[in-house]
Image (cartoon, rainbow, N blue to C red; front, side, top):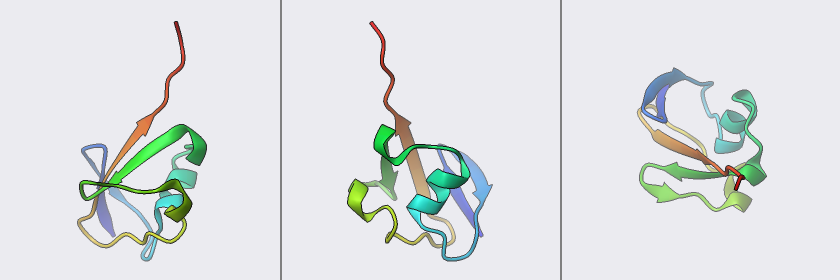
Length: 66
């Protein structure tokens, strides 16, 4: 099914969760903040939030430096 991830249309498996998407794209759940259709997803719910056709995800990475 098609969803939008960081502004780009992507294909993900039916019934994919936020955790599935993070794993597929190589993101560590502890190093990102995820917005699903405009709402911040609590990290402890990544595995239970299921995506549907047309959903929008924004994945923001923490970057260290100085």
